[in-house]
Image (tube, rainbow, N blue to C red; front, side, top):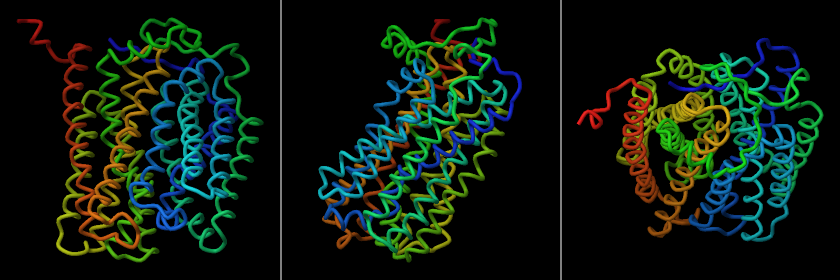
Amino acid sequence: MSTTPASPVSTIGWRAWLIWSVGVAAYTLAITNRTSLGAVGVDAAERFQADASTLSLFAVVQLAVYGGMQIPIGVLLDKYGARPIITIGMILMAFGQLTIAISPSIGIAIVARILLGAGDAAVFPAVLRLIAIWFPAQRGPVMVQFTGVIGQSGQLIALIPLAALLHATTWSVTFGSIAGLGILFAILVWVVIRNRPPELHSDITVNTDTGVIRVVTSAIDTGVGIRAAWAHPGTRLAFWSHFTTPFAGTAFVLLWGMPFLTAGEGVTTGQAATIISVYVVSGMILGPIIGNLSGRMPNQRSIALVLPAIAVQMIVWLVVLLVPGPAPLWLLYVLAVALATGGPASMIAFDHARTHNPAHRLSTATGLTNGGGFISALIAIFLIGLALDLQGAGTPATYSLDAFRIAFLAQVPIWLVGAAFIHIERKRTRIRIGLDPDRKARR
């Protein structure tokens, strides 16, 4: 039997919607910060005179910090609540972008990406916590999907207004402007967001199986919480689901999509921006659809939604890479839609984490889950950059379609390994909760 944490809130007031709106706006800005370098990847390579491995290092460092911060952020959220954590996250990202704006060297720019990764890591888990505290439990899955959908519009902000501002002004003005926006949002978050409704004296969750009310505090022994969360196959299923579904889209939007489309496939910058916009908008459309289907088939969602999303991404990517010569424009749009399935499918992982973990270790399980997709993304980004360098195609002047074709094949092993573990942990989870018989125990 699973334990599902639930908020004690039974109704939704105007303050809950206001707090959620500000939290989602902060998350949208976090996504803009996260993808800002990818939207101007060629400009960044030229500014820092960076080869492909070095350029990928920017994203790898940022994602590594993001993934590594997930469990500490979960513990801090349990102890201090969402308001100070989001505020600090916005400040860290603002300082990171300011450093990028004035950075004279690659080394300082990498430090800036560390600050961005640390700040970004704080925002999404904190908004999930606000949903758990301020909204009734039955609204949780829908609110999480809508949060993800709206937040992804931050990619459009990075792709279109940010790139246009860069080409109209200067590097320093563009990234300095994002830094200023981050400070404004830090103030807004601190003024508007509250950790809990005024009638609650502490953050509490309810075990819906037993009715036991638990006050949420930071774990005394974090190691025990981590081991207990990972010991449940449902948490591992959540991790591998998040590991395998979104990384290709993340690598595409965060760094390698724009260079591949313009320098590899030969499309114009405007066409490339439109293709990536289709990716973002498709994800926003598919989010509620996949979320609704997930709610209708809770015991089949890995087979019916997660694994098909992985298969669609891999198949379409292989078709694009195997087409002789540049791919037709319509096929690149199909690729954008295929990659867009990954984000909504990855949100199913948080349903697994919430379903199979009790309240006192939910933040830990969520942190483990959220780290999965960013670990795989940093692996993919680094391998693609390394493959380009090994082929002597590591700079904008030497990028070629054939080199990109070989480099993007590095994603295939990640899909295959992740899909295999999803199948294994799904089976173990179903046995654990009694949906399938344990044939080994019968022997």
